[in-house]
Amino acid sequence: SFFRYSLAVRCTMHRALILFRAVIAAAVVLGLWKLVPSRTSQQEVVLRKVVEDQHATRVEPTSPELRRLCGDAFAVFSLAPHQLRQLQRSIHGMDFTHVSPDLVLMFSYQVIRDKVVTSATKGKHSFVVLMNASGAIIGATKWNLRLWTPKPVNCSALYMLSTAMDTHEDYRSRATFLLWNAAAGRVRSLPVLGGTHDLAYDSLGDTVFWLKNLRFRNPCEPSEVFCPLGRKQSFTFLKSDDIIQSRLSDGAVLWRWVAVERLLRGGHSFQAPLRLGDTLEPDLTHMNTVVLTPDGKALLWNSRTLHSFFKVALPSGKLLWSVGRFGTVALRNESGHPVPEAFHNAHGLHPLSNTSFLLFDNLHYGPCGKHSRLVEVHVDPGRGVAKVLWSWSPARSASECAKLYRNYGGGAFHLPSGHRIGVFGDRPDHYIVASNPSGGEAFRIVVRGAFVYDVVAFYRRPRIRVLSRSTSATLTVECLDTLYSEYLRRGVLRATVTTPCQSGGSTQGKPWVIDVGIEFRPFWEPTVVVVPLDV
Image (cartoon, rainbow, N blue to C red; front, side, top):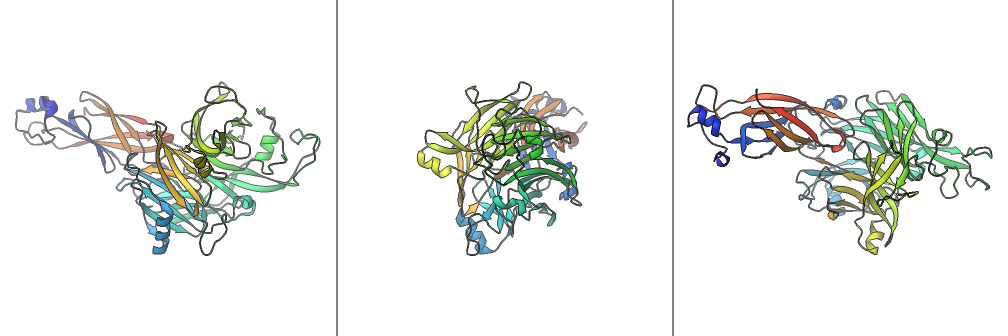
């Protein structure tokens, strides 16, 4: 049976017999990674990603060909030995090779307890930390800044926000957008005065969407429908956030979305009346996430204090829909019953697709009291309905609920394998916890003496899986890029094809090359590629 022939079978038989009985080795390689499928193939196929990312030309990608493992440029140590020892003592890693041996976690470790800085909320320096699947720190770069979540643009460049003050003073904070090309050793920056929590970099337009915190006098008058009824104003000054688009090259403001005007005077029909000057909360929006959609025609943003997330059209600024307490669509729980609210004080709005979203629900009440959890929400704007599809908490006891509860901060991230990751616990101790697809806990990493807002993950090598083969004509593979991205990432799959013998000869054949264009779908949705082999 030719199914049992070795990959090393040589041309020792007649050419026709060899072509009939030849064993195929299909080796799928993206970068340096190989996956060998069935031995019943009839040619050797090697797939190689030769264009890393067309979107990243402005941040100087190291090479159009992916020669190194993803993240190598970040895997450096720019800190003193005692600082590395501090990180190693404070970060208790755990082996998660069972999730994927190629997985890497990346997060910002804001120092909040050392000999110089004693405030638990005003750390003055941070480390960008990389941890591999064995639980070891493989890279750590010190920044004399208060850094929020680093987000990769490609395998050698990332962007992040730095602020000088805690979030209750962000309106006067000297914040900065940073774009760091680790391979080139270059940093581009943009001052964003009052910038808070999060930002989104549009590499196509070389622009930044950022959240500007501001403080203003309470505009309520008795005639305003959004003002509290029948009671005296509790706050003279209030806070809110605007969304601003700035050009990175010169800082010019290209677009601005003013939340107070848009939300309060926009004539929207929310599920609950939105009134300004609530006695419990002087912060109207407290935006903590902003995401640019793949088509570049809309923004998503999440509000901690409105307990809702919103979708806004670009460039008109029209509110397309919102989900939560102040939603424009009806909200249902996991059982399908209508509810006024399904998440409270949430952070980390993370798209799973154009219509499904993962959230870190900071405050939920259950049998053990208040606790934090991860929530997946599906939105159907056409039907005017949003539904909670899934929720999960790592807490299994009252003490665990208390330990893992998080009042401020927190993020949500997912892997294409079905694992979901959240950052639980309040400072100074945080817990990076992942769920597995069956609902159990996949791993837990403890971080002490720091503020960790959120975490991201990427693979060292892109993921390829052979789906099917049509005789010797085509090979169908499923591809996942190394990085999670909210936009399409273009590349090329190079198929190197060989047969056991040369045409008309008796020696081993030389390969020929087939290049197949590919666009990796956003949100780590699988991309299916058909490679033609009958050339």
